[in-house]
Image 1: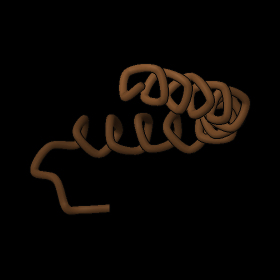
Image 2: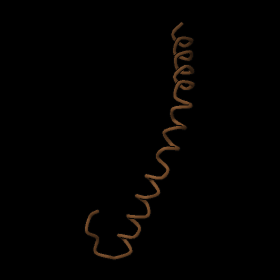
Image 3: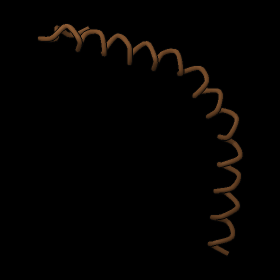
Amino acid sequence: MPAFPHEYQSDLFVKYTGDFIDRLPAALMRFDDSFYEVGTYLHKYFRWSTA
């Protein structure tokens, strides 16, 4: 953690870093679930637009 001039900045850094780490698994799971759907959609779109 960087050295902050004010105490509340350290508290906010710890809070937001903790929130980010806690939400990471859910975000990755959501990304994995929709990744292939989005890829399939883009593949079909580009195949249609170049035909």
